[in-house]
Amino acid sequence: MISLLIGLGVSLIVTLIGTPLLIHIVHKLHYGQYIRQDGPQSHLVKRGTPTLGGVVINLAIVLGWACSALYRYLAYHDTPSWTAILVLFAMLSMGALGFIDDFAKVRKKQNEGLSVGGKFFGQFVFATLFAVLTLIVPTKSGFPSAQAGIAFVEHPFVSFDFAGRIVAIVIFVIWVNFLMTAWTNAFNLTDGLDGLASGSSMVAFVGYSLIAYWESYHLKGGSGSGFAYSVSDPQDLAIIAACAVAACFGFLWYNTNPAKIFMGDTGSLALGGLFAALSITTHTEVLAVILGGLFVMETCSDVIQVGYFKMTHKRVFKMAPIHHHFELCGWQENTVVVRFWMIEMLFVLVGLVAFYSNWLVGSGQF
Image: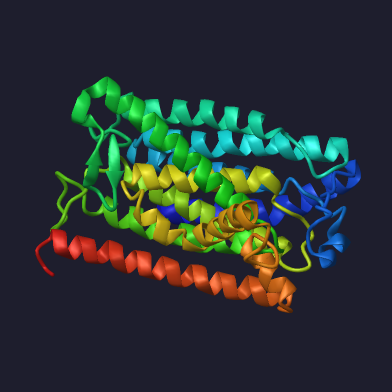
């Protein structure tokens, strides 16, 4: 518990102190956000708002976990886990792609950065590395960092081992690429209003910090009673998720309406990559669809809008993603953001109930 509190505290302090410093630096360099011209006209006043805030979020999560790991090493000689390092690699690699995209936008002084092909290629390379390493890198617990299959919670209902290990790894790489691409784009689409992505991400990672913390007390071979999980180093995963909560909370202080800084793709892609990596390493890939329900809703609204327009040349929503639809319906920006936070809270609550219910069933208590 102390190590978790250290991670929370350090991550919060880094964002509360680091964000205004970054705002000053970005202002000095004139690295402001460029607003899409086809978006709501009320957003044009945000042009020039400092971006690249995701740099502080990523730094806060890494430093929070690092200080926690240092404490555990000094107090208990507990070395950092490979699972945690791989999860942070997923976050930082996606964040690096986002940084390249953000930097290209501010250098070109337009709302177009890294090409779609370049972004997908980068995601493919990093997601493939993450996928392979999670299956082959040995861990302290003896359990692999991930399992070659698709699970709601723990046990895969689809196993990729049906045709041998090599085929399983290939299919798993494809599956991880899909998850990484889907979640990074979902978080990116949600980052369209002041405080929407940072607040919703904070809520989502609260869910994962609780899930990983519960798993850490119910590991196979441990002393916990009831259903047990074969998850590698879930305590480290809980700390990383908690650091993400604190980082988003601290960043939200400056990102709430009217935002003094945006997280940019540096933040949204990193948080999406972290969410995907946590779903894979906690064996909850399908449950993640509930835990990240708001992000799924935003993505589906965009897919529906584009698909329906291509077929009929008509629109389902006034504008997609769906948060813009409600803006154009007359809702104030703050109203949309707070109500969407509430929706994400409900999704996380339902996800936690489903997770606990699964544990009760697995323990024979329900």
